[in-house]
Image 1 (cartoon, helix red, strand yellow):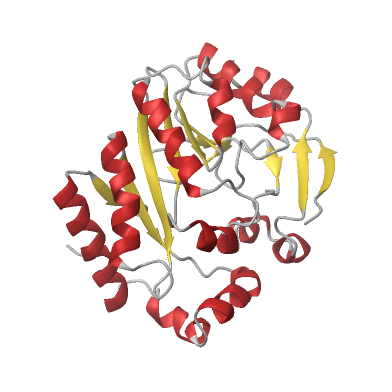
Image 2 (cartoon, one colour):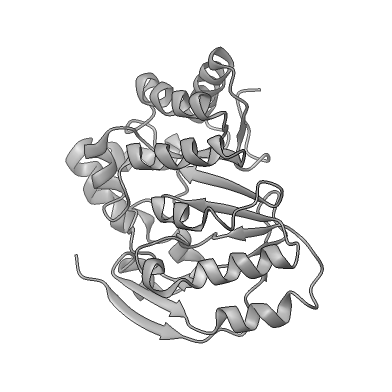
Length: 277
């Protein structure tokens, strides 16, 4: 799949963030080459073309390091999520190093940084990632390479992501595994969940798990995968992932039971969403 690259300028680098544990978000890119079918980031951009073409374009915020240099001197300290609506280590980062420049600056000005990625490119910046100031999270939805290729066509395979957790854990960096989205009927089988949570156990990582979020344009991209793999599932999904639904409660119970058996700490991504408790 060809990707259209372009550059844009930004007015701010540190944006207020409502995600649990974060004060700011920093996104060096608009768009993401990983093109994950379930991603609901496009809905936050409120642009139909972007929503329907997610994975086919990346716009680099060429001046983000310069903007950040001003903001770190005047904004209150707080944890920065890198990134929340794109992968900060998608392939273009290898060339532009926008993420690297930003996390180096944040670290020098004592801003705690929480990195979330699917890419081993984050290992390039291991020299900057101080265990005292950083934590690193890696998203894994399935350990099945074929299924991952369908859901996350531009992202590195799951075994590579597991290696990222292993490396940073061995360096004493706090690590966490984002198990999400869990899609009922597709990747919620006990064996799949156990394989993923075993990675967390091996790397001493906390598990943060999340359900599929059917925001605008998600089904437009995900529907074809569901029809191919689980005919008829697309029609049933809205009820299955509804907040507080019995299927979601059962999945929560399954995740928490496995985590308990393996001695892994776990929590839901959004505490307001009912878990099995």
